[in-house]
Amino acid sequence: MQDYSKSKLNRVKRGKIRATYDVEKINTILDAGFIGYVSYVYEGRAITLPMAYGRKDNKIYLHGSQANRMLLALLKTKEMSMTVMHLDALVLARSGLHHSVNYRSATLFGAIKNIENPKEKENALFCFMEHMMKGRWEGIRPMHKEELDRTIVVEMIIETASAKIRDVGVADEPEDYDLDVWAGLVPLKQVAEYPIPDDGLPKKMDIPKHVLDYYEMNKEENSEHYNWGNSCGGWHLVKSENLSVIEELMPANTLEQKHYHNFSEQFFYILNGTATIKIEKEVIAVKKGEGIHIYPKIIHQIKNEKSSDLEFIVISQPTTRGDRINEPFEKKELNLNGKFFKSISSSKNGEVSSSTVFEYRQNKNVIWATYQGGEILFGTLSGRIEEQYLTFTYQHQNKNGDFKTGKCKSTIETKGGKLILKEKWEWTCGDYSKGESSLEEIKR
Image (cartoon, rainbow, N blue to C red; front, side, top):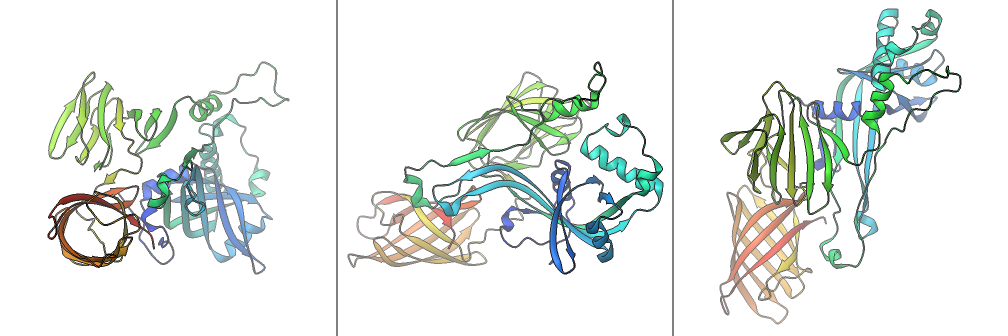
């Protein structure tokens, strides 16, 4: 995996949890699009225009007439920036503040030059045409020299880039989940409709194979299709919050990133080929007609090490959307410093409520926090991080004036990009009873 180096120019500051600098992921966003938004300055005014583009390796190609003021302005500055964006879903929340969209966007930065050599210019236009529709260049007449002379073709070297991807569901305030307000996603996608012949065509001319291939690949289907990894693909057969059934295809010598799910358990059933599945430290070969069950929190990875395609069904319950933790796991250190949490559930013998807010601090593996709200006037806790747990003691004064103490052990989980603290606690005063609570990370 190769990343673009981070700098002041391409570093994502807001929503950096959604940022990626991975070259392959950024190229996938570029290859799924055809229109980019290019900015330039003309006579002291900032202008942004949509432009068709082509990509090959780390190069972007644009073209226009010899009088194109945007391209001429860019060639004077010798550098440019371009953004490509795909809108994947409307995110409808329970409040206006938390409405959002799911999207994939990439922003590129780099130097540009005018391609003057006729052969290099033609090669660039070939790349542009193939990016639009594979096989189209061979199906049209060759360019005339006069057409080539009238065209400016510029080449941008992608020197650095970054991308942002949002592909999760609704993130509402904890107290809003009980409201009688519908919330969810409205998926959006671009599809191709059946080709319409030009009126001037001979009546019996067939639609070319490359045009029909493009239509078949991009038409509306009963099963939603998506691409992932290196030429891998999947078809959603069932897609809901509680159940996901996907048919997957992995070409020869491909693999997915090692990962685990906090909540979802999965069953893989092999339709064709042999899957090599690594579960924790064990490697298992699963053949056609066989299946394997993988539980939550189990690190796993599927590979196709054979010379033919691997086809399989994967059933996930609940859905894995927003519940995927990718490798490297060991490099991701827990950081609670400055994070706020709100109670989303608690045993009846507890005193925290949805109005109780915790503010955490952390120094290495030592943690402490203050909390207040609801029945609690003010409280403090202190403890430490031990592997995947928080252990601490707490004390607070409630509105009745009672001073309460206890001890707690919390399991750390993630859901939808938020930290969840699953607490098992015990009073060290009063009736010495035990209980459980859940805290969810909130923004303040």
